Length: 34
Image (tube, rainbow, N blue to C red; front, side, top):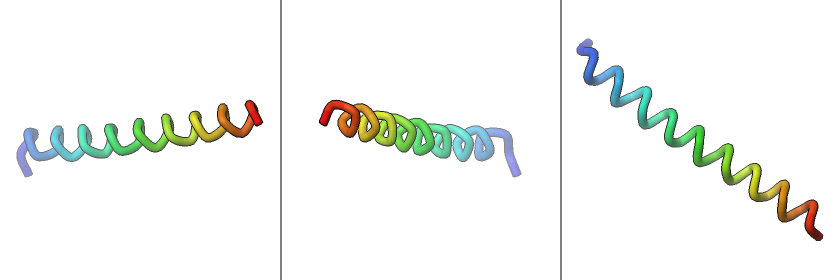
């Protein structure tokens, strides 16, 4: 397994995790505003 493949996998997983975290945070903010 090459380092480039590992970096690509980590990067894609990191982007997905960041997107999920931002979505959850926005939902919490919207829920608090109501």
